[in-house]
Length: 358
Image (cartoon, rainbow, N blue to C red; front, side, top):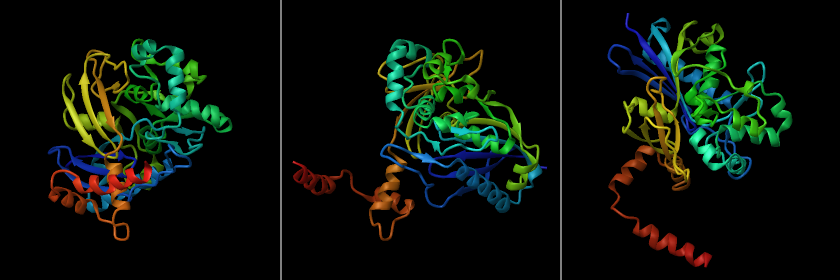
């Protein structure tokens, strides 16, 4: 009987599932929900949140559609792997229920908190220990909740990244990885351990972090409840999880020092592997633990993010020809046939803007 692997991707625009044949490595079927981009909650400028239960709803739908379209038997699916949007904060109570919406990667409310920690702890200290400024990453988002929503903070039992949360919904186990902790600036590279100094500065108890397991490991098994909802078999292994950019690099076989991947989704990213604890003194790039890291072979990923790629495509699609919006394939065809340059846009639109604002 042929065996299959199930891959799940929790993006910020959509959620996807794919079944891959183990023998051939070929994708048998894929499903994506919703048809339009997922909702983002922006209560203030610079804020971006999503409901973790929305991700779970679309994961269930995507898995069921894959099974229905392919006819693959649940018992032939040998393991589940999870990729997810990085840096998001999912905070849950002791029953595993989210205490608030997830503050996702493109939310910028915690910038000042991260900058303050960067200066208070010392720039050289932060860069040599965390390889990054605490910046606007997950640890700083959690500090924001602590300062601004103290009653919510008191209810937090564990915090997770988006992929950790979906794995929890599948397995009932609250688990993360060293790679995941590094993307939240919860990891001290010098000590190869949790970033206790940053947590102490923020007044955050390390007990809020989940159990750490390897990126490639048995991270849990499917519960009876999750099996009933998804149509999968109870006991199916969850054997891999990683943030979207380390995962994208892995999917392109970018695993060795000097190898580089370029990918485009809601954001655009250049990601290069190194065997050094490398950092940028100006914090123009960020370094996280790569999926191929091990005790014997150090592997970090240096990431350059361009925030506006797919999300700008979405804005264009919604705002130009708004009465009858184009689909992305039509936009790609128009772009492919457009002459080089943007003269008309520059000459007309930009000139009018200049006149109105000078």
